[in-house]
Image 1 (spheres, rainbow, N blue to C red):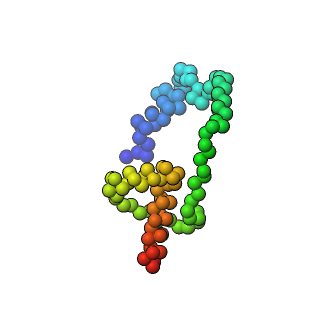
Image 2: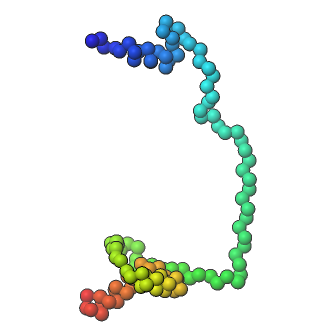
Image 3: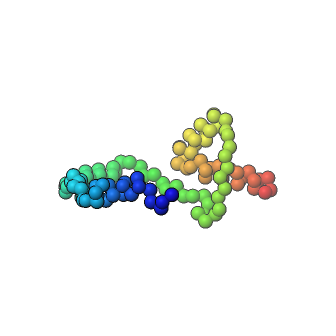
Length: 114
């Protein structure tokens, strides 16, 4: 078996723009793939409305533990009613569920001597 496959060589020649006789073939003009888009002026974005003076500012939520403390993810199932009550409490007190649960677990373990 010879080193070159004649079909492969013919495909390479076609890709290079050569016909079966080795002469250059004319290709139809191809559109430029990476042509820059025509310049279009972007529409200016509307300015945001000024803050309302009657709105009560929300207090910043501060994490209960430092950011450098290594964290471990736990997953648990709660009764639907308990979850709803916890979620409502967190919304009304503007705290997140993770911080509330961490505080409650910490208090419980301290009370038990751990």
